[in-house]
Length: 279
Image 1 (tube, rainbow, N blue to C red):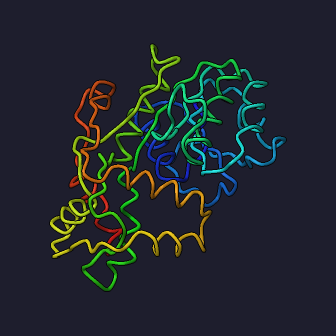
Image 2 (image 1 turned 30 degrees about the vertical axis):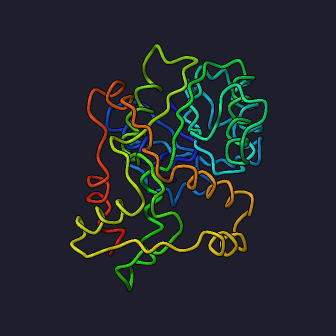
Image 3 (image 1 turned 135 degrees about the vertical axis):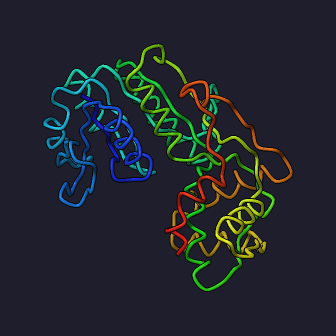
């Protein structure tokens, strides 16, 4: 039995669907099972990551856990329950911001994910980490702006990434959760092409059939505005990561194809799969 934690978020949901389609026994953890909307045959169990006493039933009979956490969530209650339940394998969806061997991580995003990685290792359970930079689903943030305009406004038009389709992350997660030879591995996953933010908006426009363009704003005021609604340290870390990529091609790896046997999907394919999200 495989337990997916974070099963109703983008990556967790896709992984549940992939595992179920392949015929694996999969269980999904949810605070509100009735609203999960997962495929028939998936066992959805109630549990709260902040209440350790609710986790034992979800972990009963589980061999492997796919761990998808919202930023800042304390993983300690789940990891204690996981160790007690005798789980044999944990696959954690981490961040590409983590720097191995650093005396101190460069920002709060890296520090949080590094902390969870170390806590997973401390359980003594077999582990694998999937590290992502800027997944393609981040582009869903454009949708609100595009409701009444063909312009996306934001900082760092030239910031680069190799956006990865959540379906490819799910396919890799399914291979790692169910296959051998992945213990103690760190997989840094990317999409198949380096793109600037402006280029992503251009591709999105082509797929949508709209003349979309990216209008660059000064980063300072945007940071300050977002910092009023989000943790300022998180905002600054995210913007610093973006700023550092301007003018530099993003690393593009081949791990998706090596692990799944098929090429990673392009950003255009991602956009086509999300037409409904952009109205």
